[in-house]
Structures are given as C-alpha cells and as structure tokens.
Image (cartoon, rainbow, N blue to C red; front, side):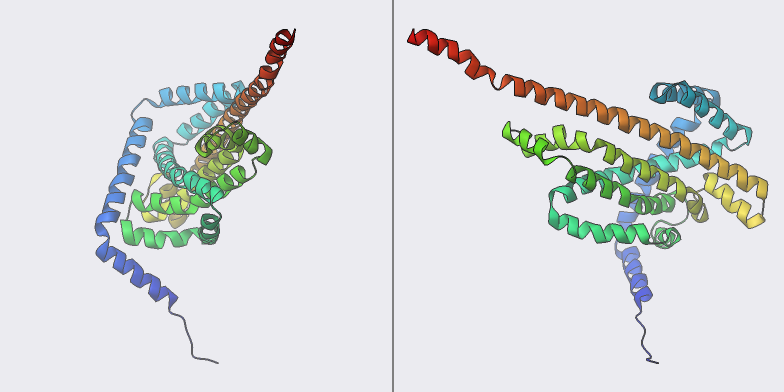
Length: 310
C-alpha cells in the first residue's frame, strides 16, 4: 500500500492561522456588525410586552393570509409562552432574521450577476455546490476560529449554510423569464437595467421568494447547531437538553423551533405570491397599453391623407 497522504486539513489550518494573524481587524469588524444587528433586532422583539408582540404578529398574519393564519400564529406564539421559551425563541428569531437578511443581501445580487453573465455562473455553481453539500457542523470550525464563542460565529455559519438556494433560485428565475417578453421590452427601447427591474425581476419574483423562503428555513435549521458555539436561544436549550438527557426541555425547545418555522414559512410564501402577482399584472397592463397605442399613429394619419388627396 502506498504511503501517501494529502495534508488538506493542515492546509486549511494554515490558511485559518494566516487569516487570524493578518485579517484580525476585518473579522473583528464583521463580529461588531453581526452583534450590532443582532442586538438591534433582539431589542425590537424583547422590549415590548409579550402580549403586544403576539397581537401585532397575529394582525400581520391576518392581513397576509387570512383569519386562519392569524389565529394559528397567535396560538403558536402562546404555546411558546406556555412552555416558557419566549425569551429563547426571540433570541433565536433575531439570529435567524439577521443571518437570513445577510444571506439575502449577498445571494440575490450574486444570483442576478450569474444570470446575466455565463462566466460568473460557471464560477458560482461549484462554489454553491460546495456550500450546499458541506456538513453543517463543519462550518462551526472556521466560525469559532475567526469569531470566537457567541452569537457571531452562529450568524457566520448560518449565512454560509443558507446562501446557496438564494443564489440558485434567483439565477434560475431570471434565466427562465420568457425571452419574448424581454425582446418586447427591448423593442420598446428599454435599457438593460430597466428590463431587469421592470420585466425580469417581477416575473422571477416567485422563484426569488422561494429562494428567500429556503434561506429562512435553512437558517432555522442552523439554530440548534449554532447552540454548540454558545449562540444561546432555542439552540442552546436543545444543546443543554442533549447534554443532560432532559427530554421535556428538548421537545419543548424543538416544538418552539417548529412554530417559528411554520410562521416564517407562511409569511414569506404569502409575500412572494401577492407581490409577484401584483407586479406581473402591472407589467402586463403596461405592455398591453403600449401595444394598443403603437398602431394608433397610422390610423390617425390615414384620414389626413385622404383629406389631402380629396
């Protein structure tokens, strides 16, 4: 048997050591940004009375999907209060919102760029394959090395883990827009940027929102894993339940995660459908109006020609 081994793990370790030595300022800046965003979002959810947060969430759910979703949201949040996991749930929700926001900010522009440039797409696809197939726990190794224990490594690992579907579905949605519709916009003299804003993005909105939905779901799935690096919240409770074999605590924290997942999933689904359909309707109305106005000029000029001949 050949005595041959690739020291890939050592190469990665050396790279992390170099980054810790030379880029400490950069990762300290990222850590400050992560913690600042987390504290701001957590303040929004934790400062008002619990009942006020539940009422506001139920009203938003009512307008988003109707009274059934509003009632279900209120009951789900009351269940979290009933099992004494409200503070932990708000901590986890804050982490998810911050991580999902950062992932969306990166993934949607990157997906648009990949959709409009084949070279970028060829580079991005293997990177997304790597991020999507890497075991989630592995992300915690560089996260701890670069950001230390706490919320910041949890946010960093969550962003890496949740990034891929946002990029993929954004690129897919834009590439699948009907070419005839894009050509119609070009025929009316629209610039590429305007075509992107008023045609491609509205028509791709259902796919883009599906990517946002997947980002949120993957971020929630990382909540428990983030508990291993001291992120707290429901993930910390599940980690504590595992270490002490506390079955009631584990199921209560797990069900709280399920409630948050269902509420966020339904919210993003409702927004994607309504916003996407509204924009598509406006686009079709504009294109229909332009098509009706186009032949109006020759029709108006014919009587003038006839009068002139007469």
